Length: 518
Image: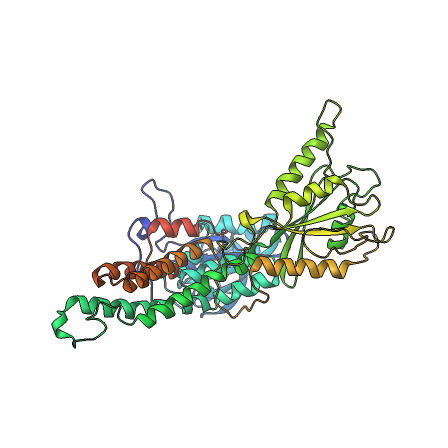
């Protein structure tokens, strides 16, 4: 890929005007790449100018480390201080040993950051890693800022912004689907698609500006340009079609990354906690015969066909009047339940089969039942105001078989038993159907280019709006000098996605959201 042009601003300096470290520069940095704790290993990442030389100054075999070729691993000790340089066979100058380590050496430009660097593997635990990092600080390394390693990879032309963002997506992936789609972007499929669309628009823009630079007399009479039509209009239409497909991928990509929120609701003692435990296959919620046992929400994660589902057990809903005799703790629990239900993507509402359908159940269905499709809804969202998808379940079917309920919203009502597992396959099928509806498509292919962040979505929307406007202006016979700036807006928006067009503020804001060590 082409090396990005460094943006103007403080990114060219290693320190802000206030003296704080800032993104940019090549000074040596170090940070934990794994969280310190009880584990077999802790990894400390180092990068920057003279990184290997500085590390060698606190290494038991300094010359061996200095001369290490790229992609090699050197065994030795990190030592507290260095007197006279020791031989490769012994401790560096007799300094105090901190930890026995393996140093993986990387040489720029063929490294993650494009700079010389090391990954130091030391023993796990809290003390060993912190001791090594303290010695590295004394040798001249500073703490890396959040995402600074990936920032340097971007600035040194190793990654474009779509692949840089996919690194953090991969770190935070909660399911196989999320991981697969992040890997897809990391491999460059989104970057390639953006560049393909941009090249189409650049050709259209070039033809438009060429016509503007010359007199109409220099073109053949009767040509499309002479008639005021957009040059290469078919290329602009192809670009718009590709942008529309990218925009439509957002619902699926968001589902793969963040998952859907499914809230289990119902009257007290309807079996919500038992169903929660059944779906998670572990005893997370307390289950008793006493109504109102659950006073606050409890959550857990599960995966359905690779999609993450955030499942929440909530306090039972009932009309207790809220009078002087009402339990204030229960009231707070029900209020929190209603807040979660309002945020839910999917509601699993349990009818207590032992008591049958009640007026409170019907009141809930009237509020949260499906509404007619909104023609203005965005792709993958046929719920006005993002109304949750309601799945109604007849629980305790092992005791009381389900009875037909006329006028029930949402179609079929699976009969389940949270106690025995009866009807679980039908419930899982209903959840998968709901997830597919939220995503706006039945299947997902990791190989298909898709947008992975809100930043990318906003810029795709900006580009497709501009291309649509340019085509509309052309259809209305507007002059090309009005259309050209609109096309350039689309090209610039696509350049921002990959990082060809960027500013210091945008980049610092984006990379500051990364974890330290990435």
